[in-house]
Length: 629
Ligand code: 7RM
Image (cartoon, rainbow, N blue to C red; front, side, top):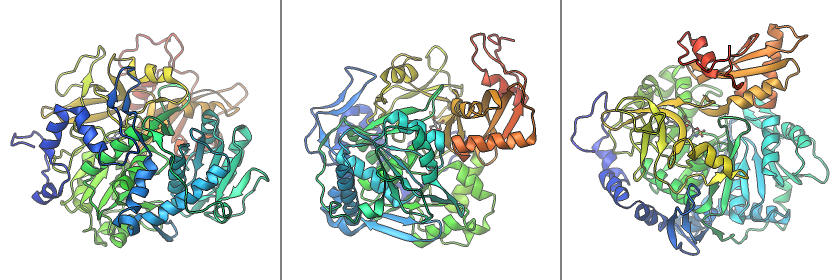
């Protein structure tokens, strides 16, 4: 950035990287600093609007901020039609590889055709603007097609991660009042089949609003089809009604695009709501500058489309930029630990964006696996989901990037929709730090009273300026939106993370300060894990905490109190783990379960997980003046 000597271990980008970059660093920060609205307005103009906005930012009802007010657009139109009208028509929009090695690809033209055909099916089933559609499947192209088809007709998609199970799906179907569920018969994971349709059938018994279930054939296993409710996707797509032309719904910038459930401090997961206009401008711009997307790039975001990372940076961001998005269905180590490296070589991937847990997992197998492959197509690398430990960072940098590829460590959330703290390709890097807020954003680290802390002191990470891809509300629960994010520190958005800032202004994320646990980068709430445990007949009370884990980052540790008449045993532990897996999903299975006689609580009856965690780690529990015992 400038010639100032930076402290600590610093990795400088090469001249080539800087020259290639879309972002002319200092200039971009300066422009955005000088005129925030002007900065975003200029980016918005790169996209297609049916009607221009009258106002870039409306903060008259904050924290219910509005962006590009009065504008009319459609994100799916910008992802597909805009490119089909140009020479990009025959360029690949999506390359997909199945776990078993199958290959499928879609040009922009072909992807739009599939999306149009499916939009017509949805319309014929009575799906209208504003209706909710839930999608539940593995990483397959139909997930992308389904999301874009919803967006095209103005319906609101709600993707439920394919690793979730019965109760998690039920809760999300029920809360969103979805009319249609799009599900796959099953999915492949590490060579095994997950019976998604079967899980969905069980969830549907508990959820009443779903009228139609569209089943995508992936595994070809026999599945139950309920007459009058269940239909095969491929059969519908062969009907004359599934024709290639489907007009685009010209939606308001502030019309909802999707809801995505995420875990919060207490109780049920929250439905985070994003809109067409601001989210489009935010994801387009951040991907363009941070990952330096160019016309001929093949971008691989290895997350799952069921999480925000996949929404923003497998589906929307890459397509808005006219790049080629690569999607891989399966596990990184299947059938061998070189699977990822093999695909990078085979498809000539230019940018790889993944989570620290995946890096740590692959690191364990040693350098020989990646070294067997030509990874020279890689230009940039990325990390997301949790803090990356410097050891994993250096391995990623040296072994995968061959010391030529800067690592973009991007901090952001389901709620923020887009990268918030992130380097640009020209930023000097420090392993483990996401460096600085994206141009134009003002963030800070504050103490209990909302006052900025001193350099290198830990505090609450807050955001002080609005940004276009910010969540608009919690669907059907605006009060909770205000209370959860905007009331702890007036005028500031509370992220729920703690962090430090060093003498160079670089941010270092420490972790969640609330009851959210990040397991392998996946966001889970203690409340959901606990309620899954308590729904087992043997359990009276439960508390879940996250403890450090070498590969997963955090592992779930549960403490349970048995009901009278039940005995502790290893068999019961296994049964409880299976039960949580069945209700919530395999990622939520506790690593350890301890039987206890009581749990530390405050006088008002809240479980003090902090005390449990300190005890488990053999640390001082800190201030326990509110402890009831
Ligand atoms: C994108 C995503 C959000 C939480 C967030 C943090 C943690 C995400 C980083 C990170 C350190 C990072 N959305 N987090 N990225 N911590 N460095 N680069 O993960 O809604 O699922 O989770 O994830 O705690 O608050 S999320």
